[in-house]
Length: 159
Image 1 (cartoon, rainbow, N blue to C red):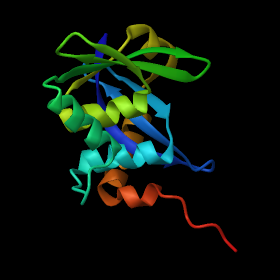
Image 2: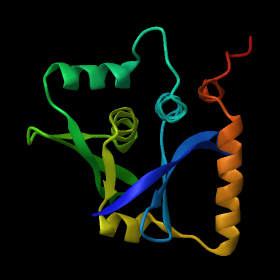
Image 3: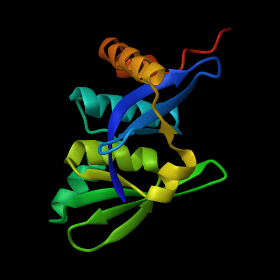
Image 4: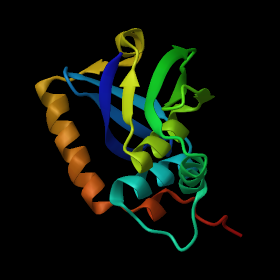
């Protein structure tokens, strides 16, 4: 397993499909995972430290874990099959729970848990950064500084 960090979320054009971009800490690979708009907002809120009036789903999940006197130790992205990623939540109690990577990442950001990715997943779906891609990543980071979670909400249907 390799530790990864969340670079951020963005909307891929022209499909308007959100993705979360992970970066290998001790290497040069990036891992893009396409996710839903709600999960993109949840990850963006967590990264920006946005406080909501009432707990959102991932905040509620974190509060439940704490109320049960447990702790999320790490998230493991364990597999990718047919473009679908799979993850496992690993708790201090020894409990393991299968979860979507997007939900797992949103929860990990709120709890401070490490995010790990299986080497074979990085081999299959990871992208090795070149100098041009590093420049793109820097532009992406600048983009993240200017975007808000509300930008991932769908516009109202036209009448």
